[in-house]
Image (tube, rainbow, N blue to C red):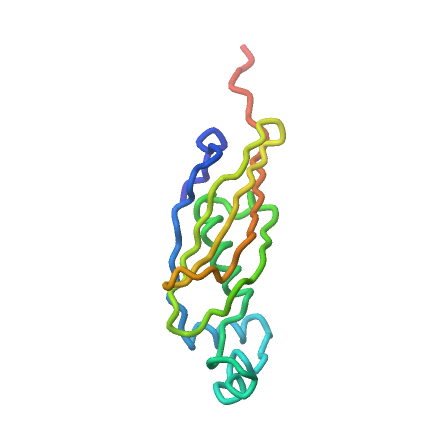
Length: 147
């Protein structure tokens, strides 16, 4: 994958969206990998007894999808310096979540880019909002050569 060039970035630019279909197996794998085995993510009966519609995906799994969208666009994970946001709704097995992002600002001096993020489900409901990612590109190399 090719690393994005800072000069190719402009405020208002939309990132290519990323859609993920959430499955029970994916939630179980995330629980195992993260160590977060809260029964609301793994036990259907427990989740229902807690007033949920059934098991729900980890919020951090949703955030990981947003992270993937940004790093796929950047082409280099090390450029991403921060990503945060607010969980706005539950993600359940069977949901299709779509991550979208728009370049909010670009600072030529610091070579930092700020990206606003939103994740919605197939019903158009926000499940992650007020998301912000910041990327920092390395200093531009001098194009002059010593003679």
